[in-house]
Image (spheres, rainbow, N blue to C red):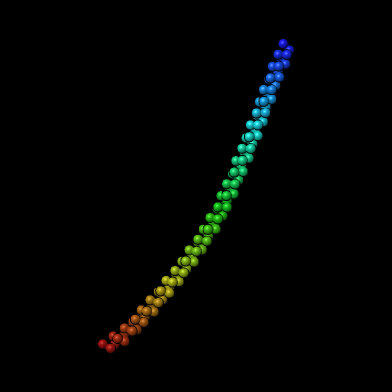
Amino acid sequence: TIGIILHLQQQQGERVSEYHQEMIRSQQEQQQARQDWQRRLDELQQQYHQEAIQSRQEYQQDRLDLQRRYDELRKELTQVQQQHHQEAIQSRQEYQPDAAKT
């Protein structure tokens, strides 16, 4: 009987030990999973931060390019307006002597 009791206690002890080992393994897996997720979250946050910086830089560059192009077009328009104004004055001056002849 004592042998059976000792055997049962040994089996129970092994089961308790297996349970504790399983608990420890499960906790380690959970901790590893948390660390993996935290690392992935950190990577994503870093990537988002870099993309935001790049996007701001591209926006600023686009804005400068558009401002430069606007300034070029404005200058071109001013030149065309001045040219048309000069042509109109010249045309009037050319027309007036002709009108005086008739």
